[in-house]
Image (cartoon, rainbow, N blue to C red):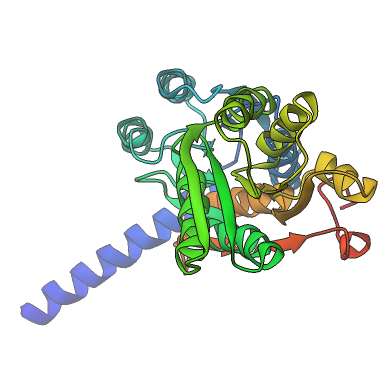
Amino acid sequence: MRKVTKFMATAATAALMLAGGAQAQDKKLESIGISVGLLGNPFFVATIKGIEDRAKEINPDVEVTAVSADYDLNKQASQIDNFIASGVDIIMLNAVDASAIAPAVTRATEAGIVVAAFDVSAPGANVTVMTDNVDAGRKACQHIVDHLEGKGDVIIINGPQSSSIIDRVKGCQEVFAANEGINVLSDDQNGQASRDGGLEVMQGLLTRYDHIDAVFAINDPTAVGAALAAKQLNRSEFIITGVDGAPEIEKELASGDSLIKASASQDPYVMAGEAMKMGYDVFMGKTPEEDTVLLEPKLITADNLDSYQGWTAAR
C-alpha cells in the first residue's frame, strides 16, 4: 500500500512538473517596464538600449516602457505600482534608494512580476547585474593617491544614496584611509549625480577651501560639473576623477587640458542587457546559478583611451 501511495505521489509530482514545463514553454515575453534614476543621463540611455536590444531578440514585438524617476523615491515607487497595475512581465529597475525601495519591489514580486535590478542593487530583486562599484571607487581614488604621491587635501563629491554610489564612496574612502598623508576635507555633499549638482556643490567647496589637491566625483556628470565650477572660479590646482567612462569624459581626457584625469569605466549597455537576459530566465522558470553578477571596471586615462571601447561603440 505504501509503495502504491509513493508511486502515485511520484506520478502526480511528475505530472505537475510536466504541466509546469508546458506552461513555461507557452509563456511569452510581452511587456517590460524600466525605471531609471535620471533619463537625461547618457548612461541610462545606454542601459535602456541594452535592455531593448536583448528583449527584442526574444520577441521583436515586445512592448518596452522606460520612465525617469529623477532620483525621487516616491516617484519611482509610483512607477513600479503603475507597472504592476499594467501587468508587465518584467520590471527592469535602477533603484534610486538602496533600501527604501524594498516595499515597492516586494509588491511587484508578490504580484508575480520578475524584478531585475541593474547598476544598483534593490532588496528583494530576483536578479542583479552591476559594476563592482567598490572596486570602481578604489581605482579612481588610487589614481588620486598615486598622482599626489600619498599626500594632499582631497574632496569626495557624494550623491543620492543608491547602492552604487554608497559602494563607490566606500571604495574611495578605503584607499584614502590607507594613506596617512591624505586629508579628506569633505565627503558628504550631495551633487545629485548630475552636472548641475556637481557644479553647484563644487562652487560652494571652492569658496570654502582655498586649496584643494584632488576631487573624486561619484559619476562623470558630477565630475564635469565640478570641472566647470573650477573653470568659472579660475581654479586649476587640483585633478578630478570619476566613475562611468562616459562619452563626454572621453572628450575631456582626449583634450589634454582638462582637470578630469581618470574615470573608472562601466559598460551600461552590456550590464543592463545581461540583467535583462537573467530576468527573462527567471520569467521562464529558470533559477540562475548566481543571482548577482558584478562586472569589473577599468580605469580610463589619456594613456589608454585609444584602446577603450566606450558606450557608443558598435555592438
